[in-house]
View 1 (cartoon, rainbow, N blue to C red):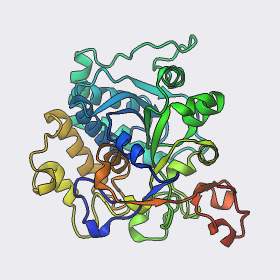
View 2 (cartoon, rainbow, N blue to C red; view 1 turned 180 degrees about the horizontal axis):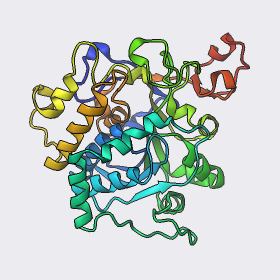
View 3 (cartoon, rainbow, N blue to C red; view 1 turned 90 degrees about the vertical axis):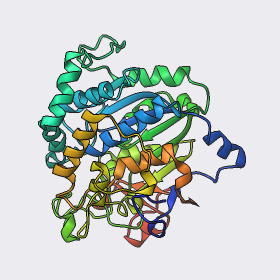
View 4 (cartoon, rainbow, N blue to C red; view 1 turned 45 degrees about the vertical axis):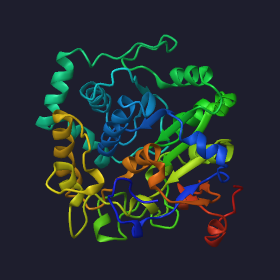
Length: 370
């Protein structure tokens, strides 16, 4: 499964990993029905591109986007929530609530990553978007009952519990491009709600490639992660390996994995070219996006500005979360090469590694149940 929308050649595609048994024909037909999507993200650059894609599909009636849940992971408050609200306003999706997860990750993301959200809020193009939203009272958050909590931002936990409780069995698509922290909390306290989930699509892990928590193995990877950490882990797993381990051990719904094995094939820029940036700003044409209705002017300018200033100079940037979003919206563009058992390693030396059977034992670790 490679990049949807023509960001890489068919020959460069990697396998999409399905972590539950193969779909029956009935299940395949069910996947074509309008999806009810809960998006769980951490409000960094790639997430905003995903928001633009989800907004377009929601407004076109292709999906029903139920909520946008922000995890305090690869971003900083209040910019993470304010940017997300500004995007919702400018993309005209005020009907999709923005909620904040208050559950804490076990391992915090590096501040050098999280600063991108703060820096994005300082761009003149983004300031214009936020000012317009402020003038239209679009930065006010919907009030939800959160047991008397005094915080400004609505709590995602009670909303998730109520929404899943009211949902039909097997009706919800979880698009998760962050850690599993809040879902572990919800399903551990309310295990009966797992039956409401139809599927989860998760951008996470590094199966047969290097992870991204250690930065010394490739010149382009410098600055991406911490030198000396294990090179098996990917941040959306490493951020809370214990939550990932719990979900993989207890989930009774299919999990469609978009790991670095896929995302590494779709860099924003590489040593040779920045074709994605050129596609974004319109200086390069592509038959794959001919006739595409791009986001409106303000958001399009802000996304172009952000990708050019923050992503293009850093060769480790990939289309991580937007690749998982593309799979939710256009799964037929991806190659599904079957299933694989995976377990999350929590041993300190390999914490956050999504490992296939036999791999832990090769490193002298106890083989976990999968």
